[in-house]
Image 1: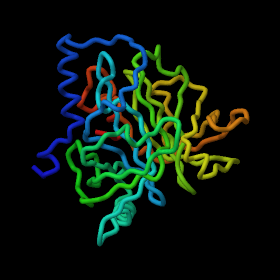
Image 2: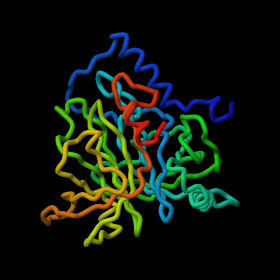
Image 3: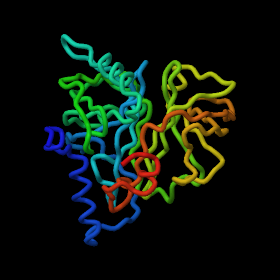
Image 4: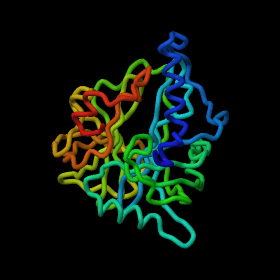
Length: 290
């Protein structure tokens, strides 16, 4: 067994403990008023998906736990980042490895413990921040992964999206909703996650007849599609669909934009259930995420 498999990062261990408690009837979903617990979070291991080659983006792998969504991973977070290391270029190593392994969709980041909410400053720009990490080809919590760079410093260039899950939210959005982000020629959609059961999905996209600036993409614009917010109706590879794009900082009316989906880099539903399911679901197997 490889070293990466001998040491399971803390996210999955926390999920297993919480799922056991929920299954035993010790936990149950209930609503509560929104709280602001950022300052109370302790350092933790926050594993992330990596996408992008021209620029690097990280998507935090979130989770729910009942009753109060009190997991340290109760956040949907998308970051633009840069990889550095004295005497090496881990960002070039990552980009080259992705080019040489086009069949591999998932690359992941295993950070050293840090306090995730400290990346976000409510009401102001994101503070400068960095943390140490390892870069994996493959999903670091599943068999078959490989460390391609360690001792990496991750510099946070921009907090594209930061949101704490709200246990008082009545329901998930009825319509399929995504966060649009990227830079230059690379654009991505990440499914907007609300409450269990839900799903995490990140895929590349292109647009027809509209260009977005780096500034717009850096704000993580919301995109709503006129279809049910379900796994079956999610945007699939090579599909085209018209979405309504909303920019929270723009005063203009929402835009109707045609999107064409490219690669589905990540899809996960089992670990966003309560209790969590760690085995591949039928939908994950159909999508090739075993």
